[in-house]
View (cartoon, rainbow, N blue to C red):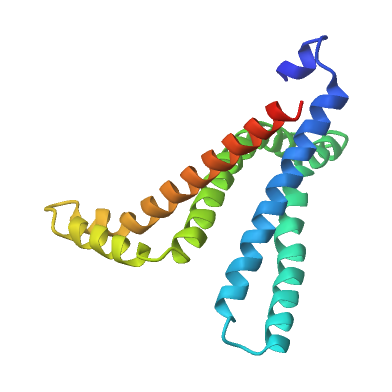
Length: 183
């Protein structure tokens, strides 16, 4: 809404930036899904790996991106309902249009957290000695009174999130430096 109200904002560029961000996010999530999928069938034959990755790609494309398309099209659904007659349609349309911004913000935060957790988990899984660190953190959490069980359960997630955040910060720093150098 702020970009729409500001006449200095080039809405086409604003939309292009949003789309580029979404494509980048989709690429990262797809890569993470492929890595996880390959990790689950690493000991299988090459043919089985190809079949499982292809099947996962098809299911994820239809399921996840179908759901994402539905969420992105909420505003179109609200517009359609606004053109219908009847009080029930008006209430439903208002509810959709009121909920959509909150849903989008929530999905943005949850999606970003998921990328850091999954990416960090993928990195931690491949790091020598990381399993021992997670095991030690889990046991240290269990030893604490009252919240020990909860901390023990959260320790692997927190380590994954930390690894994902550090890796993301390093990549962002590297890309920012490269941009400055090659300008």
